[in-house]
Length: 305
Image 1 (cartoon, rainbow, N blue to C red):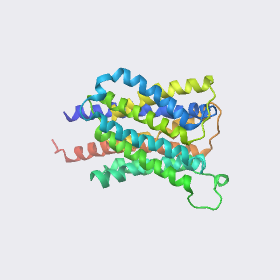
Image 2: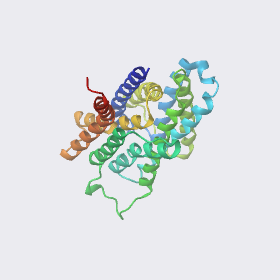
Image 3: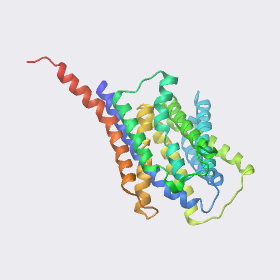
Image 4: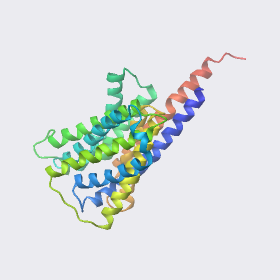
């Protein structure tokens, strides 16, 4: 049974890694799409598409006992993630926002200890620290990015709020995720985010220019990065821990940066690549460190023949 649970966890971790690769690639797609639509219009279109796809597939599963309240709570938290990050970018630099949002890799184990009284294993703790340091080196602000006046501005605090909200979303997903009805839970969640995004439209400056990059981004992000991806996240988190999931998600800026470099959007220096390497090492330390240590201790306790 223990080997079966371990195998299921490794499969879930592998699925989350593939999901993180895809999420990293969508950064460039979304960046190009925002040249033709304001953030809340894009979010509304994206989540309408994702919600429609899953609602058709899930149908009656959305109304299973307990699914609607759990899905709506997750929808509120996920919407806060997108709203705080989007608004925060108007008052801070992208590099500062990226680093501050990525702090969810630290907030997840902290909130897990405070709210769930759950201590992470030592390998996971080492991995979290390495990933946090790597995230800083990968996305740290340069002197040219420094904001006038110093200190944290409103946009920085909103980005930190996004990191906290995303950490809460990861923890709640672990708690609510069902091995039997992930489809209904995610469908309700996407419908909720679509409605909340649309409700914001009367209060923001709207902009929409239909173009091929925008249509491709809406369809790709709606179907793949929202419907399929969040479904995979929910399925995976029903089989692994929130801290392990957060650590795997820390790989996202690595894949995003690599793809951005590959398509010529930016050039990374040695410090950025060092940061990416530390994140990868942190994930491997979390995945393999405790297993290797436990195996070594078990061999040490085996009596001699």
